[in-house]
Length: 115
Length: 110
Image (cartoon, rainbow over all chains, first blue to last red):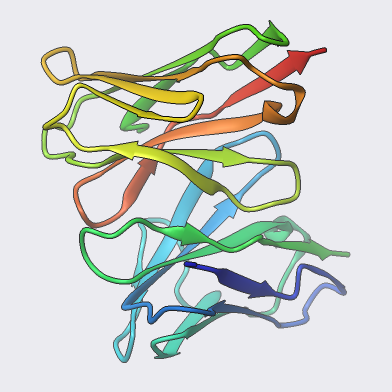
């Protein structure tokens, strides 16, 4: 149980393109979803936290207009990287949890490459 | 500012040996300490977790030792296998967001 699916697994696109990444909890309802960014050989950096039906909370230094997060239902959150540039190339990972005091379960990540 | 310090950065162990990874934290509000295992190109997978009311938790070959007074916790991998070769992250949470350690790359030599 507690499966989180992330799609797509890999995206390669041109500079200036907007890219949408989906995160779904397949077998549970996620009250909270998290979006992380991970550079090669580094740890996970939290970008934002989203609760279903409310605006996402962004970490310091993360541009909310650049990284749009929507958590429209208890099983789906999306991250849109707007007008992506090469410096946005990274591994983006989502996680979801059923409620407070519950562990986070992670998706398999999306490798984003901006040319 | 990293709230959880993890060491070593990498380690190599022979098959059948013990891998030990250490983490330390400062925020006494943390009350949940999970360990995640990550393979290349994949997301982290929850391995084992502990809360500060116990000093040790064991699941199969994986054991967490927790020292509340020292604000330290560690992961022991017993009888290490080549399939355990991965990056391990410790983390700490106060029931909201996770703060991750820098990660330890474990290589198990056959």
